[in-house]
Length: 287
Image (cartoon, rainbow, N blue to C red; front, side):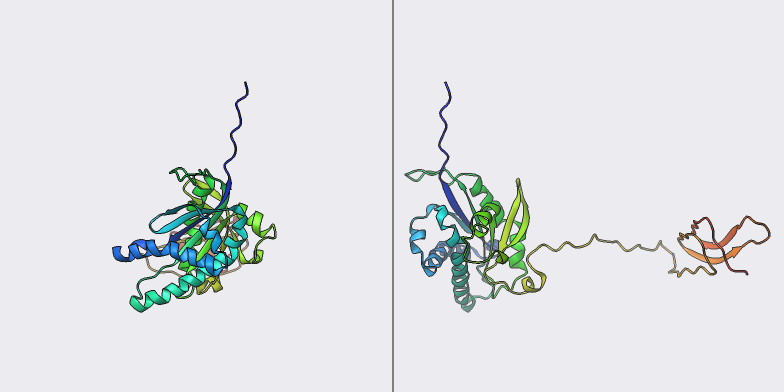
C-alpha cells in the first residue's frame, strides 16, 4: 500500500533582525534593547501603513539581541520596501533619544528576509516556525557581507542594513512586485556555517564609505611580502654594462661583467656576490 503523502507546510515570509554590538553594552542597556526591538518593528509597520501585518504575525520569537517572526508570503513586497524604509526612520528617531543620554549607546540592526515552507500549528507550539528558510534567515543576518555594510557606513546616519534571499529577490524584485528597482540591490555570495548561497544586499539609507567603496566585498590582491635582506647584507644596486642578448637572472651584485675575446666560446666572467647568470648569448663591453 502506498504511503500517504504529507502536506507541505504553509509558505511563510521570515524576518530576522539582529543588533550590532549587543554585547558591547551594559546589562541594563541590553534589557532595554531586547524590549524596544519588537516595539520598533511594530512602529515601522504602522509607519508603512500596514499595522495589520504586525497584528497577524506568526511564531514571534525574541533572540535577546534580535527578533524572528513570520508573515504571510503575500506581504513580501511590503517587507522588502516600505517596511525597511520605515524601520530605518524609526531607528534614526530612537537614536536621537539614545544620544541625548549616552553617545556610546547605539541601536543599529541587520535584517534578513527569506521565504519557504515552515511548520505551524493552530495553537502555539515550540516547533512552530521550524524549517530551512528560518535557518537560512538566521545565517544570512549573521553573514560578514551584511555586517560589512554597517561597518563601512556612518553610525549616525545608517541604522539598518538588509539582506534578502535569492528566492525572495526572484519572486518579488525580478517578478515586478517590489516598490524599489532591482538596482537598489547588490548580489553577493554568502557562506555561513553549513549555509551556502546567493543573496542580495540593500541599505535604505547608505552613507560613509558605502558611497565611495560600494556594497560588494573588495578583493584585495594577495599580500606580497617584501624580501628582507640577510643579516649583515648591504643594500645593493645592480648594473649590467654592455649590450646584452638573452636573459640575465641575478641575485646579489655584479661587480664587473667581462667577455673573453681570446677564443670563440663567448665565455663571460662575472665578479660580485651571490650571482646567477642565465642566458644563451650575453655580450659584454670591452674592458
